[in-house]
Amino acid sequence: MSDHPLIDVLPVPADVTAVADGVAALPPALLLRWNRHGGAQVATLYTARRGGELVGAAFEVHRPLTAYRKIVDVWTASSDPSVRAALTERLVSAVVQRAWAEGAVSVKREFRATGPDTASDADWEQSLAAGWREQADTPRWSGPVAGPFQEAPARGQILLREQSSYPAGAGHGESPRPAMVPYMRQTTDFTCGPAALQMGLAALGLRGRPTREAELRLWRRATTVGGCEPLGLALAAAEEGARARVLLSTGQPVLLELCTNDEERDLRAFLQDGFRREAAERGMDVRTEAFSLDTLRAALAEGAVALVLIEQLGMHDESCPHWITVHGTVGTDVFLAHDPWTDANLGESWLDGADLPLPAATLDRLAWYGTPSYRGLVLLEGGGQSDGMESSVISSTGPSPAA
Image (cartoon, rainbow, N blue to C red; front, side, top):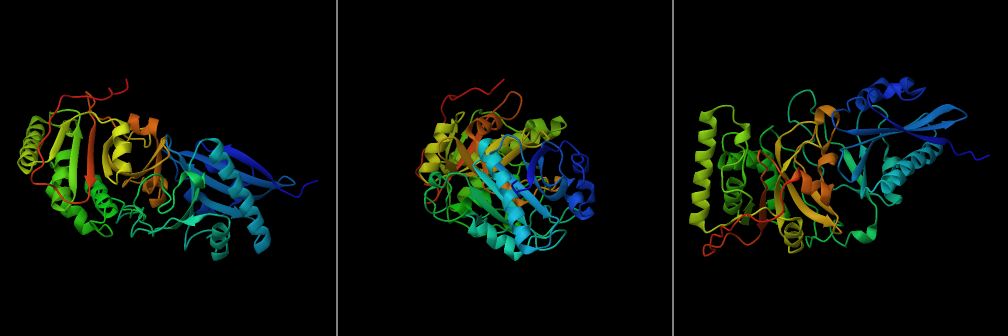
């Protein structure tokens, strides 16, 4: 008889302790962390049993509609280093094999410096030896900068499904940029646009590591009193040395759905009208066009970075307009994005937002917002805004929003 433990894969709809016998006996602080999951998240518990006794467990969670999995923790009953290493490898392999079978392109793993069942340096080195690599450039913060869910960012590792699908350099699809793109978690509920813009500027070499000071400065430049729309972000990008191109499927003011009265709607429309006039005076390329994914792929292949306006419902449990930074591709079917928002209250960390793989069908679905739906994209390139560039406003083209 094989001495290998039996691995079970168990969906976790709510309380993880109710999923399998023996789980309730795990360290309480560990279970508290696992039970923070919720909302739209998909959670799975992997248990290892030998002779019916629970000897190990791994907790995995990810956002729906995405192509990654995140291992939050691996627990083993034994403290013997060799037994622990072998069982950890079995549990991690079970997560990875299932992830690949379900179409994921990456698996991520969190390593905390403190807390219950903290992974050891030996665990870290064991993963690296097995082909994982460090998720580089750990940010300064992983969630809100203040409040009950503020935590020190965990270190992370990532395993890629098909190494041949990731060219040399960044290891992230067809992008020619040789370095990793720094990640930033937005510091407020309303600064996703400036956070996304900073990451885009850093990818182009126009800015170093994102900072909160720059986030709020860019927000003041681009805001429409609350969130930021494409024209304001493009103008802020131009002042930072980028060449910005705007593709917006409507010539009317956007994000008016967020307003609660006529005064707010009038103010937001007035500010956007001013942004549009300023863009025309600068000769910025502004097109009334519903962008296609082919347009986005071609721009990324040429070295551009994209700020994409999405409806985050689907990945999250809340309807809200949101900006993400799309910086690479995996083949033709998956786009890689930095999402500056994490649901820290549900246990998400920076690893859920960094290098987030979005299948093409997912991005095509999410990249519509409003009633009636509209689509917004800001393409960023290095080299600065050309003073002689002609403003281009054309008839609305491209795909229609899904019903």
